[in-house]
Amino acid sequence: MSVQEIMFGSRRRHIDEVIEANLDALVRFAYFRTCDRPMAEDIVCEAVVRLLENREKVNATRCYLFKIVYNLCRDEFRRKRLPTVPLDSIELADEPDERLEQEEIDRINNLLDDLPPNEAEIVRMKVVDELSFVEISHILSLPQSTAKSRFYAGMKKLREKYFTNNQ
Image 1: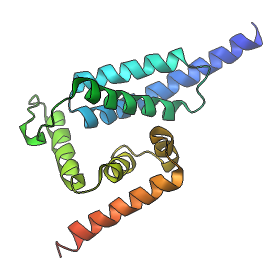
Image 2: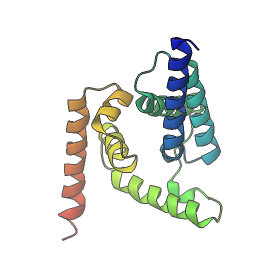
Image 3: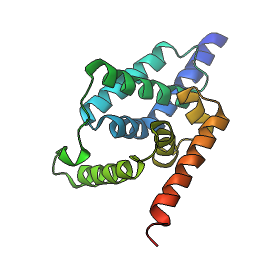
């Protein structure tokens, strides 16, 4: 067995582990942005295919997957020009897990509605998707300091609006 074969096998195992460890988070990430589970699953499948096609060029596998899913979600909205639908009007199956997940999405989206979109997306990525600032900056192609400042600005606005008004 050659060194290349050993390295390729090791790289492939690493990629498989990253995919397996992040699959649910990636689907949730896409679903949160599309509100359509089959579309979210298709987007994640496409991202995995792209990762496998470009595996030799990719260093940060997890970041790459999230960036591809993020871009595919944006592309889907651009291509289809999906109408903005109030989340209250979306009907889901009566499965308890999906209903609870949709309620959580509704609650979070309602909180983030008043933030500028660039701040809301970073708060969502940090809090909901549990991504690091390094990952967020890679996914959004922003300096890490910009991602941090937008996050803290968004959180400050949320605190001022929801915690000072409710006391």
